[in-house]
Image (cartoon, rainbow, N blue to C red; front, side, top):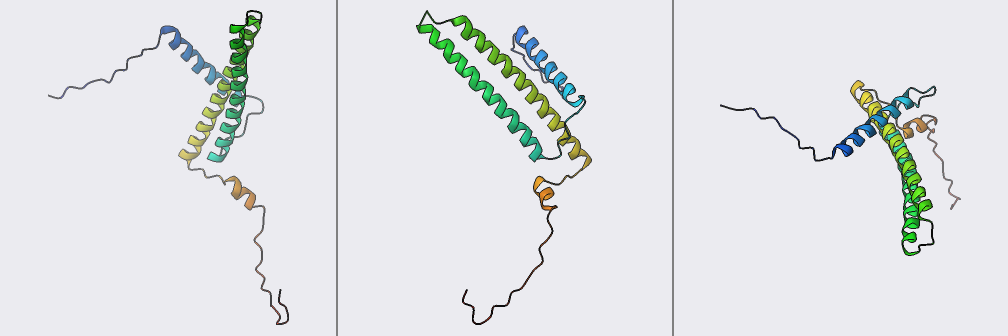
Length: 156
């Protein structure tokens, strides 16, 4: 007498938050389609080294945007104690910083989804690409071994 139970999940997000998150996911998918469908699409990500490079590039960009947002928030904070400082400009600058941050994060998410997809495809197909070090090493030839004779009069 075994009964089957279905695992249920309680969504505690508000309707607005759920709608915004769905819209953001759609935006990331659209950005990925634009990136891969452009006239000059980026090359497929062949290995974890390239994926990390893409991640590092986007993380640095996002970190720069966060720094700008922090500075703008500091400017807005300084308007609290001085009623003569323009709070509208500070709030507008912060909104602009958040806009740029969302854009950078969306592009980063799209690029990383593309990288994950490329890595998954390479893993499933069993395609092995050389690492960057192997590519660089391929440009060099092996050195020939040489033996030197030391004469008895040489102390060096």
